[in-house]
Length: 473
Image (cartoon, rainbow, N blue to C red; front, side, top):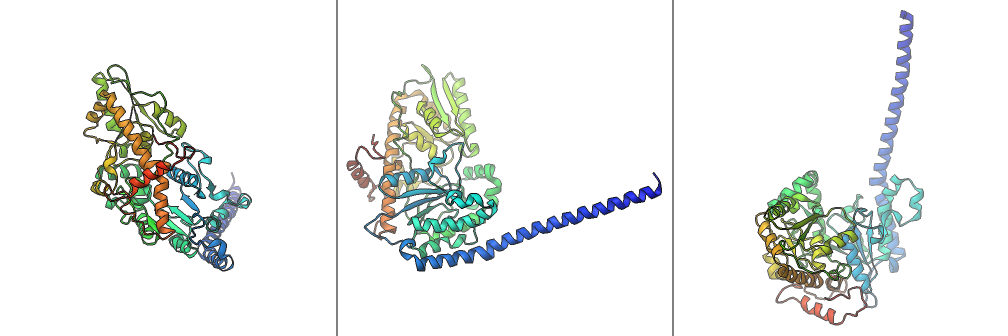
């Protein structure tokens, strides 16, 4: 190639390179402009427009948007904004009691739930969302949802991670805005919304949190603590739980506030506790979705040791199953080992509702739950990584003990976690925060001074056979 040709090639490369660089710069500039406009919308334009709209709504339509307690009608209820199973059961319980009760979520977990499990979806409230760019919808949706919901509901139930406006600059003014329209706010923890590592006293649970959620556990601490402080200061009612050491305010103290439909989750007909591991196999189930938190490896090791000693045990690890399949397998099992670290959750509750003996553990300080709540009535077999072998062996060898514990589990689930029990708890809360009645909810579950046992017996006596909570045995 001649020198002239080489120079021409250099000129061509430089020319087109310059064009490409110019194009890249233009694209980068356009991208920066878009991001800048988005930030202006988020922080400068939308919040004041929204607040102005709320001001006009309160002035022009106070009768429709502002809630006022009245004996002539029950408050309208909404649970949000995550697709939690307990929200579904709580709203179902109160709907059966004659309340207008709905769930409001952004999505649902397809592996374990169905879309129809929840009522209102963020991005389906208005048909116009389908014709707008997704990015624009994400910016305006929280504000439009807020306006939509204040016209329809009176009491809002949230977790410690914010409500409808959680993704906006007004996240820490939401409760005050709801109060402006006469709404009430109830907050209750569910898990990751209330875990603060520095305050965890259960070191094994802390280890499990670090193992499974190290990034979130460490870097979300300030955010979680701010949410807890915000709700503790501004919410009308806080449902307590001793499993979350960071929570410092509670106005009622159940052992575990979640509910379940005990008609849907009921002991299968024809099931019998027969085998003792020698004359036939015993079925043990475990849900290991967070293995280091649940102690899965110790459960597996205990079963393997029993097998080596000649016991016939069928261990099934249940993960990612739809409720119908999970219920079928649990119903056919003999023992549920839920977790070996702290408390009991939804799977333990499902096992008890199905009449199964449940093994779990309470490693936090439980005196307050024994003295001021109903933990002493809980039939769960206490076990930890050190004694799970002995506890499991006792149940495997004794069908009669499993039968006795299974019957006690069913009674416990009906009394404290059924839809009927949910109705009692929520109605007592509403009596206080909505109607202003002097209800002593701190002592509602007190073993000696509480009124819950009497309320439960009254509800059973007056309950019709055709209601949503008809099962009482």
